Image (cartoon, rainbow, N blue to C red; front, side, top):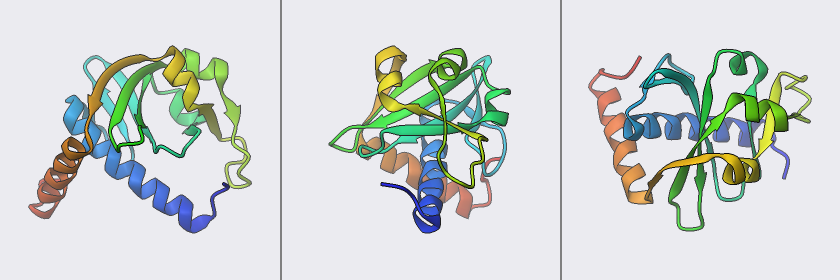
Length: 148
């Protein structure tokens, strides 16, 4: 189902919230507000999340040029997420342009099935683990110790 402005904004907000929670659980350091770019060990990555109904995810072309890998979290039917490490080179090999008129070729999409087939599984988080991480991030923000 195509997105409109409201569903796109909701998806973006969910993605940022998930990115922050997953960064915390994975021990990654967020690099700036409003982005899920992280330093994870010695690599630069972006955290992307796919809800159970999503068939693909996107990364901007500009961001791809700054990354070593993507950390892709894919939701199962129970609300748990499997996290995969996926190389940018592999992403580029399988990507396609977003059909969104606003993307104008700047957003590249990849099927989640590509990540499930070719990515390296690195973690699995239950819905309750993610809920705790999200609550912790909100508490940190309320105390003014939000990152970055």
